[in-house]
Image (cartoon, rainbow, N blue to C red):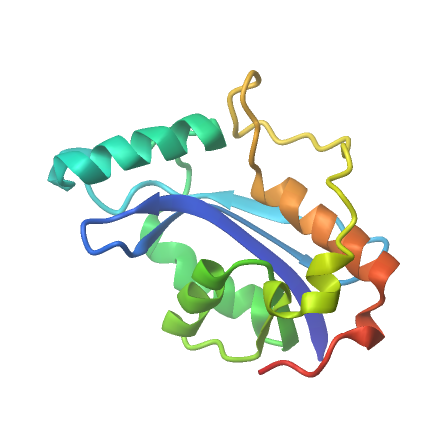
Length: 168
């Protein structure tokens, strides 16, 4: 059984559900490198309400990726999760939305690091990683799932995985 670090970035639909655009996943090991996937949108942007489109445009600016971008069909998310998390003992995430999203796919063995006050209070500030992620506009890359999982690894290794309570 293995432990993994997972982060997703995305947009919202009309029901305020997460539409994943970028997913990064890596084993909890010093020598690990993240795998990343960029998903095509599950439907055309014009099916979104005007307010949701405006919100997603702001999100697009932050992520440096557009709604239309993507390489992998959205329907492949479940198969990718099954293939890469089949031996998962614990999946570490840093966000309630990601935890909820994982639960919707049937994963309950996640651990939301943002629920641990001591961890949150001792999180090491973002370190500028030499992350090469070609999926974002060069001038933006403000937020990137690959950077986030690398930062999670640094924080867990520095803070100490043993200090964390069991997943719930």
